[in-house]
Image (cartoon, rainbow, N blue to C red; front, side, top):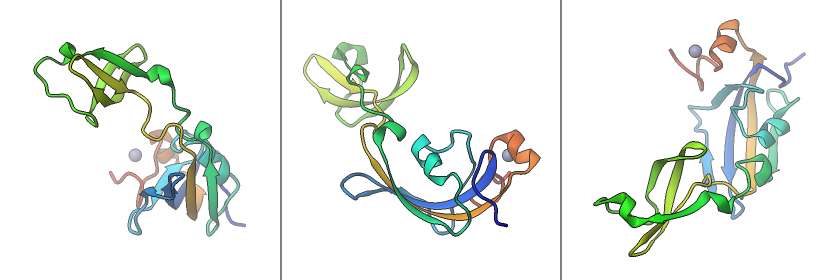
Length: 161
Ligand SMILES: [Zn+2]
């Protein structure tokens, strides 16, 4: 009997993910599939849910709603700060940097710059988007004790060390 995807299985997949406009945002390459230990938060929750119980050779096409992908957008993560905080540094829309916030270090992107203020957005770039995944399951097997200990899969598509 072939293995089915469940907690702590070592799983290898090929995947492509599209935004609601059908634009491909990311995909695994033929030489480099994605290998991971299932059920440990390596994937977004909606994709884990869709994969559970599948086995090698299965193909699926699934729409993962924003809430089960990278979350909804939160207006509270958009902040306007005085431009003088940036000193001499040139600040332009689209710039990304790490900022310390009440929620710890966060990646933010500059969305607007005026003469006096800079508006930054701490939402994940994919927040608020329903994502479409095309997935082919390549392999499902028991993870080794060492892999479970390390928290990642060894070999092609995983860690090689
Ligand atoms: Zn390792």
